[in-house]
Length: 501
Image (cartoon, rainbow, N blue to C red; front, side, top):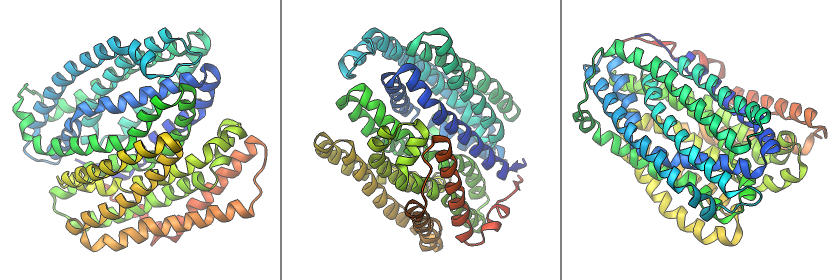
C-alpha cells in the first residue's frame, strides 16, 4: 500500500487551519448575534463532548492500530473487522444512554449548575437536551474516522471534516440569523449537521473496510485482544482530560455564564495551539506503527526529530505571539480594547502552558505506536494529584489567573520528566538533542523575536491594519525560527514520500 505521508501532513494541517480560522472568524459574530451566554453554552457543549468521549476507553485508537497493522500486511484483517463491529454495537447503546441522560437532566443542569442571566432556563434546558444528540452522533462518527486514519487516508478525512465544519458553523450562523431561532436554533442545526456528517463518514469508511475485510462477524473476543492497549489509552485519556478540562468544569460552576463565556474566549485562543500538534499526531501515529512493525529504528529517529523541529518552527511563534502580544491579538480579533485588557494576562499563561503541552504530542505518538501506554497514564496521574488540589485551593481566592500559573508550572514539569523517562527506553540517543533543538532553542528565539517586536514596532491602531501587522510579524517569526533549525530546507524534503508494504 502506497501512502503519501507528506500529503497526509499537509491535509491534516489544512483541515485544522480551516476549522480554526472558521471558529476564530465566526466566534465574535456568534457573540454579537446570540450574546455571551449563548457562547457560554457552546463552551458547555465542548466540555460535555470531552467528558463523554471518555466512554471510548481506547476503542477507536485500537481500531486505528488494528487497521494500520492489517493494511501493512499483518494477518489481522478479520480481527480489525470484528473489532469495528463490536465497537459499533457498543456505541449504539452508549449513544442512546447519552441522549436519554442529557434529555432527562437538562433542566437540572440549566437551573442548578449554570448561573443564568438574561437567558431563559427553558431555552438553556432545550439546548442542553440537543447537546445529547449532537454528542452521541459525533461519538459514533469517531469509529469511521479511526478507520480512515488507520488506512492513512487523511486527505479524504480532512476534506470531509472541513466541509462539515463549514456546514456546522457557517451554516449554523446563517440559519440563526435568518430564522431568529436563537441559541436553540443553533444547536438544532448542529444536530442535523452531525447526522449528515455521520452518514457520509460511515459510507466512505465502510466501503474502504470492505476491501480489507469483506465479511466481519460480531465477535466480542476482539475486545479481549486489544484489552491491554485500550486500557492504557483509556487511563491516559481520563487523566489527561482531567488536566485539560477541570478548569472549565470549576469555572462553569463558579462564574456567571456570561463571565464563563469570556473565559472560554481566552481558552479557545490558547487551545488552538493544540491544533498545530494534533495534525502531526494523526499523521504520525499510523506511520510510526508501520515503522515499528518494520523495526526501522534509524528511520523512526530521523522522522521523530525532523517532525518535532517542524512543529517547533510553527508552534513557538504562534504561542509567543499570544504570550507577548496577546492584547493586540484579542483587539484585532474582537475589536474590543476593553476585552483585550481583560483577557491578555490569562491568555498569556494559558498559551504558554498549551505550547509546552503540544510539544508532548509527538513523543506520545511514538509511545502509543510502540504499545507503551502506561507511561502517559502514570504521568497524568501524578499531574492530576498535584493540579486538582492546587486549583481547589487557589482558584476560589485568586480566580482564573491562579489556574493559569498552575497550568504553566505543571506542563514544564510534565515536559522535563516525561521526555526524560521516555528517552530512557525509546530513542535514548535523542534525549538532549530533541530537548534543545526542538523545544528550548525555538522557544528562546521566538520569545526574543516577539519581545523585540513589542518594544521596537509601533503597531497600527485600526483593526484591519493591526491584523495585517500581526500576521506579518508571525510569518517573519516562523521564517526566522525555521531557518535557525538544523538543515531547515531539508526538513520537508527528508520526510518519507511514501511507504510500501
